[in-house]
Image (cartoon, rainbow, N blue to C red; front, side, top):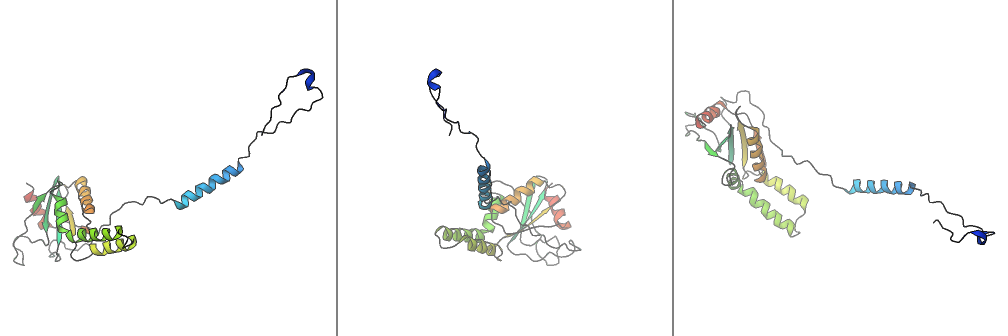
Length: 211
């Protein structure tokens, strides 16, 4: 630390040795080392933000999707998007005069209001939602660890009682409606989602319904 000699001047300073001033230069090398150590510590201990993505199931495309009868589906909803409208039907699709002798499928219109898509999905996926609520209570009470919770949720979404969703669009559908629909599926904890190609019979019914 630097020292400052005090005194009057003149003859009183004669023969007195002045105090040597110490250098004020500071060596910053240790500070640089400390900064790198702190940086390394924070990099190793920080949890980086993980990208939030939603997995979609893309089934194999059939060579003849229109003439081939659709695979039997239980507890499923198929959404048909066109322009600013959203239609849907439940379970299997049956065209007019189908070989199975089933009554033709009737499209129903819905929207993104609280009593629209969200209510429809919550009712259809009640099994998964109830199971998730039950497991969350076990986690909160420290009776289950997070890793076990995640595994059981995945298993519940793959259960046959879980709702399956198919999304089909025509060439007039908007990206906004598609993204909004996927967001609603995420909120409703839908685990099995498949964007597939629309069949000609479905497209004809969609055009007729949207007039």
